[in-house]
Length: 203
Image: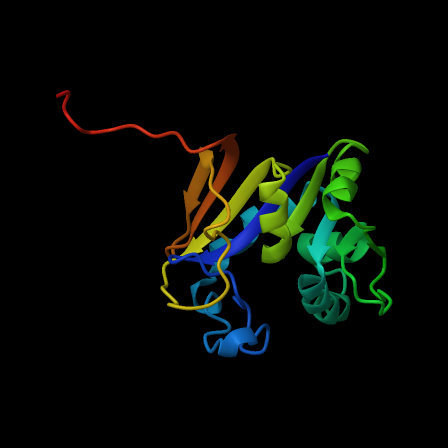
């Protein structure tokens, strides 16, 4: 399966708590729900289409807990809720508490080897949503095939960031769309190490 990661980001690269004030307050984060004011009618169709391609989901424990508290209550009312409630979900966690959401199972450790084996099982997309800490691990291991970023025109100043000093790399832009609210949806393919050059004139 192709591993496609989807993440909501601010202009300064923060992914923490886009959906609500209580979603993730770690570190005293006070801007929870920062993406919600930018969601318009044109947000739904591209999201519905991508979820329709999911063969399975791969989630970190925090994202699983957020999703499991919401989507079963929503029911199967649209392509997103139906996919999340009915499609297999693999959860990376060391928490001994059981997973109660339908079709959710714990992914065995070590994570990199388990995800690599999971990708080899068949066709379709293995989708990672949110799960920033897990996504960093997958990027470092070279397991991400597509990175889809929803970049929102807001600067938060603090919060959890996807890219830090421990990883570098280059990407190829495959497609992009701008929503009326200013959200830029861009899909990238990893291209390997950073390439450098120089604007300096020859000596």
